[in-house]
Image (cartoon, rainbow, N blue to C red; front, side, top):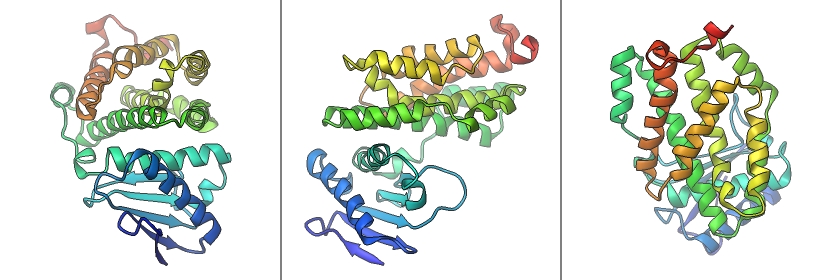
Length: 282
């Protein structure tokens, strides 16, 4: 099914897959349209919106990319409907913000920063591992930018709800750490993805009245990690993520550099830094 949003015929093109409830489709469109009216149009003044009845495999309820040269938002209704309403709606607004801020291919085809290339050479890191690290850092920078943009646009309460949801530890995350903690490269990926997941909350640390609440949620999110890894993540948040500028590409480079210095070097060459790995601790 194809449809166009009245009044936004040249902005949103909708395609549905499966048995998609029209009322729910209109609700999703209403959220997106309200965002564009308040914050501005998507980067290319056009966006594809794909709404799926069901999802395949694991993943989030919504995603955005611009690999084909145009912002594309995918929403999976089975996952969307399983979330608290305010969290799900906040997530849809985040996809609109991505299409405004990151709606061109350059945000999804990012070259390896020099520090990561050097680490690949020094430690013989395979390209797929380095790509995963770069992906996590890029997502962290973009998620930070989206929260800051939405909060500046007045969407504070729902983004607070979204951040609190993302900071709530899950059984899957705890199990993933148990599997990762014995292997240095697995720990590198786990810690990088932790930075990705918590980055959406970092701009809220600058909001009076909710900063302390966010700090408590961050502490809870990291509570299963050994102290040395808590300190590492907190250091990167304070020294890299909280210092992000308006330049997303510079932010990605800076975060990758922080990951290389604080995680990769210390995990793969601990004797050089006087640190202990989990294998030594256990």
